[in-house]
Amino acid sequence: MAQLADFADGRRARQERVLAEAAAGHLHPVVGREFALDKAADAHTALENREIAGKALLRP
Image 1 (cartoon, rainbow, N blue to C red):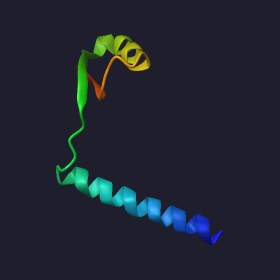
Image 2 (image 1 turned 30 degrees about the vertical axis):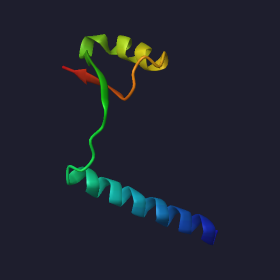
Image 3 (image 1 turned 180 degrees about the vertical axis):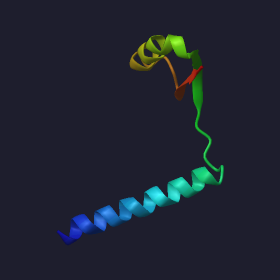
Image 4 (image 1 turned 90 degrees about the horizontal axis):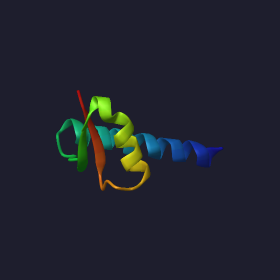
């Protein structure tokens, strides 16, 4: 059980570090393509078909 607790503690520390980096503006996700919100199904299909490198961004 101690190993599981150590794993959880390590994961928590990594999560906190990543969130701090995001809050500081140091993370820059790659947006592969933008879609209008009403085209969310098209975005999902493009992701499933691996037509996008990076994130699919839905715009209102």
